[in-house]
Image 1 (cartoon, rainbow, N blue to C red):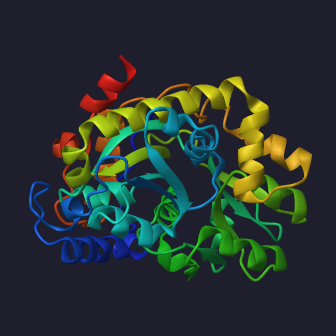
Image 2 (cartoon, helix red, strand yellow):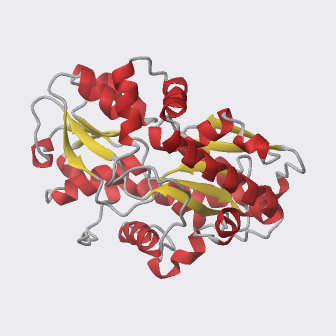
Image 3 (tube, rainbow, N blue to C red):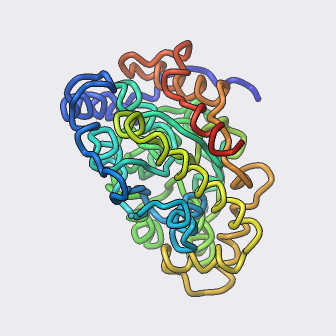
Length: 342
């Protein structure tokens, strides 16, 4: 893949640096072996483990399927998968009140700079995401002077908007940015025409394209090397619970296999979490996770050097403190995944 330039997208990702400061302030020492909040939140043997997800994106829901099918319970674990808003989730993960999170870069990578969070596996390495536009807009260049949702600064949505603008030789100053606390908050203003574009994933993409006249994708992110769905964990908790972590990874791995082998159960999970009742939209959401270019894998994979270096390069280009592609291994732990899948 052609390597994109490192032109700054700082207007969209400046919040990431703020997030680093908040995480560090909330977690005390940056060492994962310290006695800060990340290790003191000890569930103990048989205690509840929380996996947070930032929203009902279809690609994140194999974790929910594993919970509903009792796969974690079969491993002797009490696991709850719950939706937590993105900025709250990464702070809770770094602080230790949440043990794991199923989500996308860059937030786990930003939190990893504190030493409190690492990637323990991934199952979607190319984002099945699109920049949607309305009002007759057919290209990114036509967004000049228009209103674009960026979600919260430093999130995947914010950075992806910047990447699309850069592809057209534009910058944040060329559009009006509307900050929304949650990506799904863009749906209503987009359908009314008061918002002109936003980054979307399934099942939102299918629902919006099917209900908003003139809506279309003007930029696809499928060719991007990016962890779009993976499991990040609190390093302090994991270091004290390696056996439980291996068991959790094993259960999640079975959940991914089940996602592919049992479409009906997978669609029931999407319907429940995303509150979709229309069969056509439900099937489209599930089928999107099988996309050969940007779909859910059949088993957990380590976060690759190529992917993590690109994420860190993007962060470095936007002045995220301490982001260094050469230190990509500090954000990734593949040893426990190897034990879980042997």
